[in-house]
Length: 328
Image (cartoon, rainbow, N blue to C red; front, side):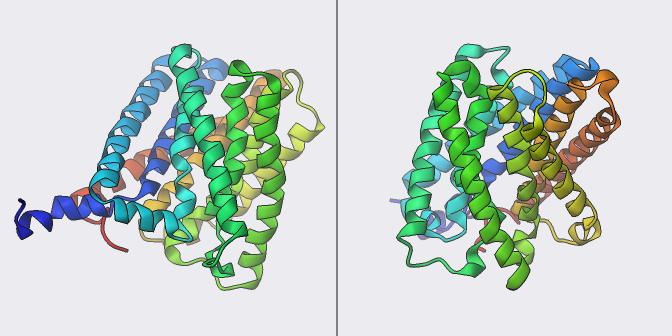
C-alpha cells in the first residue's frame, strides 16, 4: 500500500491534472511537418526536414497517449470530470485529429501505417462528433460564455478526414465527413461570432483560440482540392480567401497576442497557421511561377517554423517550472 506521501507526490498530482489539450501540440507539430513536406514539392526544400518532423510528431503522439492512458487508469474520475467540462470536452477530438494528420504526414512514405491512422482517426472522430453534438442538444450546463472557437474542433474537424481519405476510401465517405464539417462550420461560426460581438471578451487563457477561426476555411480548402482535383475553382477560392482574411484580421491584432501570458492554449496558434501555410503553398503550386502566393508562402512557412520553435521552448520551460499539468 502506498503511503500518503507517495499518493500525493508531485508526479502523481501532475498525472491527475494532465490535460487532454496536450494533443494540440501533436496537431501543431504534424501541421508543421506537412507544411515542410509541401514546401519540398513546391520549392524543392530538403525532404528530410518534413520527414524528421513527422517522426517527431509521431513520437510525441505516442508519449502523450501513454501519459493520458495512465491518467485514465489511475485517475479515471479526473478524466470523467474533464469530459464533463463545458470547455475541456471540446479538446478530446484533438486526439482523433492528430491521428488524421499523422495519416497525411505518412501517406507517401508509409501508406500502410497512414491507412491505420486514418481508419482509427476517422472512426474515433465520428464518435466524438456524435457525443459532443448530443451534449449540446441535451445540455444542462452550457451558457453563451462557454462558447469559444475551440467548439469548432469536434465538428468542423471532420473536414480533415478527406485530405487522406480521398486516397483510402470511397468518395462518398470523404464527402460525408466534409459535408458535416462545412455545414456546421457555418452554424458554429454564427454562434461564436455572436458571443464575441455581443458578450464579454474571451478570458485571457482562451484568447489564443481565436486562431482556430482560420482552420475551418483553410482545411476546407485543402479538403475541397482533394475531392475536386485539378484547377482551383470558385468555391476553393472563396474558402482560401476567407482564411486569408481571417489571418490578416488576427495579424492586425498581433500586439494583443504578444502581451498574453503563456498557457497550454497558446498552442492554438500552431495548427491554424500550419493549415494556412499549406493552403498558400497549394495556391502557389497552381499559379504560374507561384504568382503572388509564392512570397506569402515563404513568409508563412518562416513564421510557422518560428512560432513552433518558440512554443516548444516555452512548453519545455513550463514543464521544468511546474507550470503545466497543475490545477486551473
